[in-house]
Length: 321
Image (cartoon, rainbow, N blue to C red; front, side, top):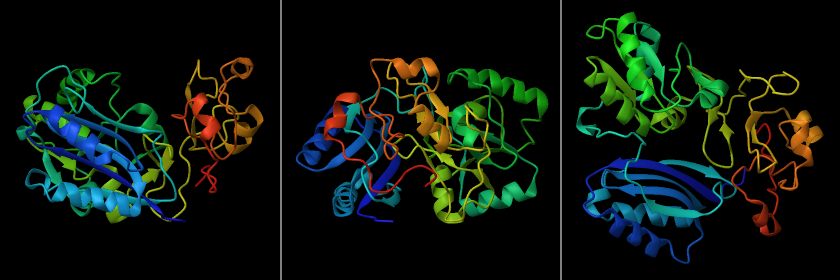
């Protein structure tokens, strides 16, 4: 694959006295640079996802590392052939992880490396918790992991109380993971405040695990919040663990309905995608507000209709990549 671009993901918890100044510094640095991003900055630190040409991405990393406050950032980097975000966004956010209560990040779980994680899974005496959304879990997760039935972050508190009725919070190791690691910083803290004493979180999240260990204990693909939608953790072919909404055949390709008034996220195989022109149901196909369909860009949910006139289809088909 052409690797002209790099996708960068990181979060860094650090006290930022005036995050609006940091927002302005980032915007000034990004000015006139071809960087697409989704960056949130708060008093708690920075949460970043971005894509850029390789040399531009490298220069940004160096720019941050030259600043003492950010010298220890752990960057997760993937090569790619194009941008994966629709625009450049850098903004202030009150909390890096939405949770309507103060979070003591100093009391988070113990970070374990992908290698330690594998050893703990093999031992088999831990509860493994996936703290992502259920639609992320649906297409890929670690062996033996459970996905808490939470619709919003605060539901996790009730889940933790129920977990205490199932296992001994003082003796049972609890392992948790998410895509990049930042959600675990919040939810591990909640478990520890709830009385769990052995709480572990996967350092760098599933992305870092894939870089280090491939898909050794992982089933399916990893959902990502960019134009790729779902990615394999290794070069080995992954077997879908989910099914097409229309024909029930195995499929791990997520699509946002082409009807922008619907925009429903659904699983669809390539055959049904072509047949239904990217729509989740028949009634959506007659909507006056449809994204123009092209089989090479059908998976790009963040591209608005008015942007399509300036958008060129990718040279590399994303479906079943």
